[in-house]
Length: 308
Ligand SMILES: *[C@@H]1O[C@H](CO)[C@@H](O)[C@H](O)[C@H]1NC(C)=O
Ligand SMILES: *[C@@H]1O[C@H](CO)[C@@H](O)[C@H](O)[C@H]1NC(C)=O
Ligand SMILES: *[C@@H]1O[C@H](CO)[C@@H](O)[C@H](O)[C@H]1NC(C)=O
Ligand SMILES: [Zn+2]
Image 1: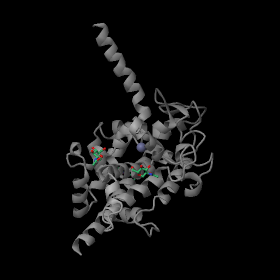
Image 2: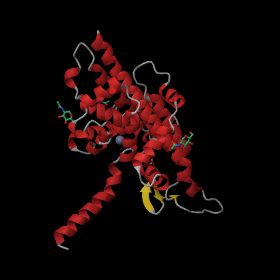
Image 3: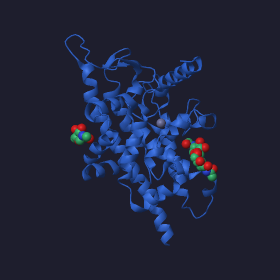
Image 4: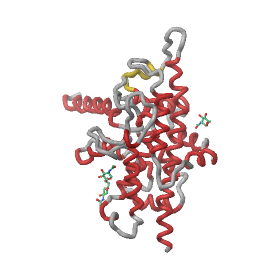
């Protein structure tokens, strides 16, 4: 093997190790959220979505649901990197828009819930007769950001504590791999579920989650005390509550969260995956259903205006 080849391979290995750091809900989580959403879209909403999608999506919203993660560290889009999450003060298990929705230098609205409001407003403005907004926004990007951030706001640790960066600075082991708590929730739980229950078949996993979604679940998920088109704050509140109850619980730095680690007479480390997977599953389902409800609302206004 030549020196160049070896360098190339080393480069790939390093790249693959760095990869986990740059993802949100992992690629699979975002893909699942958007695939689930697609099934609940009305005909009009689906048509409107397809019209806005970039060519490389080939008509499939799920194909571009990780776009916002792919571009977030590019110079041109670095401003968007704080829009993927919101943090609460340490050990506060509630979320408050005024207190928590800002970026690292304190600029208001620059967090995941602020971004959801922003991109909803942009997509709605397309139907604003005044035409004041329509020219200034790229609605393809608005759709891709919105679909991604609805997923993120449902990942419990995207609304985590400030001091540990939503679990990013809590080093843990997942089976034999060293990782961090945030990454466990973005990727590892889903990855382990794929291996354990679905023979590594993402489509099978999505179908299983989907076939479990009842009408009652849809009603409950989409019906909150929401008077405007979108209300992301309750989703963020749910996430920090779940973060406290399930994600941070027993996740002390250095602990092994996956695998048969027996500590004293208890083996809760092993239990972490089995007890948390249903939480992840239900967040993916809720995120998907709510994304569809939101897109249906946004694009049904379109129809009523078109008919006038
Ligand atoms: C709103 O969207 C525009 C266009 O992408 C962006 O420049 C701006 O920073 C966004 N603001 C928030 C709070 O998300
Ligand atoms: C809108 O954004 C997409 C994705 O970044 C880009 O490919 C497209 O060229 C943009 N459209 C305009 C009119 O700038
Ligand atoms: C189906 O729903 C039940 C009850 O909420 C839950 O325990 C189970 O994990 C779900 N399964 C799937 C595949 O979503
Ligand atoms: Zn993200």
